[in-house]
Image (cartoon, rainbow, N blue to C red; front, top):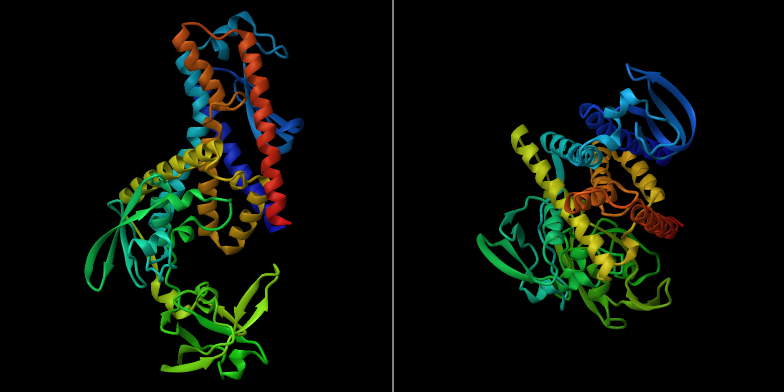
Length: 447
């Protein structure tokens, strides 16, 4: 129910605003609007308002919407001679461009305003303090260490991990990113190779592939009975600082540090009730759910909540700064979306990155339960995605119409109807293919 409610709210707000963008600019340009519909397909409910008696309709398929304008090419509604100047097709090419572009731009503007509001209220996040990078990762080869705090990426300051993620994803993956880190009161510049980000199968975190993970500590959430950990006297709530002297500063590192130690004694540095002690444990080899051999000591481990709380901050900004940051963030995410689309087209990123309505509904339901701020952030992100998607030069989308109009400017006259018809068929095939891929990914993720 939360997912359904979240989906309807997200789609309702974003689609309505998108179409209001088209509607508002069309009216401003003097074009008569015949119908404003939320949804596609058969009309379920409608009312007429205003001087032009525009029909405001609710249609059966709530996955979009449309604004139908007076147009001589529309066989349903003949255009009276006195209304010809108000027909869409009689407008200058620049007015038609403005009307078509207004929808996606309305979505991008909404994202700017939502993000600006979030920056004013305060955005919670974790400070970018590093855990020890795994050997062989780009971060380890760059010389980054546990407890390094990233303060800038390519000269642009960062305050929380979300900023680091955004800066690196926006960087050129065939080159390097320069990280500015603070270590023991010193400021160091570290070149980080980004080629590992190209090894993208649609799963995992790109930062983890680079070896960048937040310092989270490690605390025992539970100890399994009759396990090596239980035999060694480990208890729930123990904080493990190191294994054989190697720092354990994130739960995910335990498997790596225990690898190859089955049957031998390892020394765990443990903090309990403020006292640090060394606990000898003999790990044993087991088989995981995938049938692979793993070395375990029999514990459930999680991030240390005290460490996470120490690193959690809330970043707030004034109205002017927040608006500027909202615009910059929207631009960064727009560029990132276009780059990801380009990478998927050339095969450098997996098509598993595509998401459809089921994933949106799932995330929307989760964000509603997580709180107002998370929901507003998700709304901004999806609004950017919708704006970018509609600006793609694919026939049937707004970007496809803009492509036709720019071709008209270059040619000095409209494209032939036959060329437009072929383009529409190609566009329909592309859109159907994308929808099928997105739905397959949705089912794969959820089920």
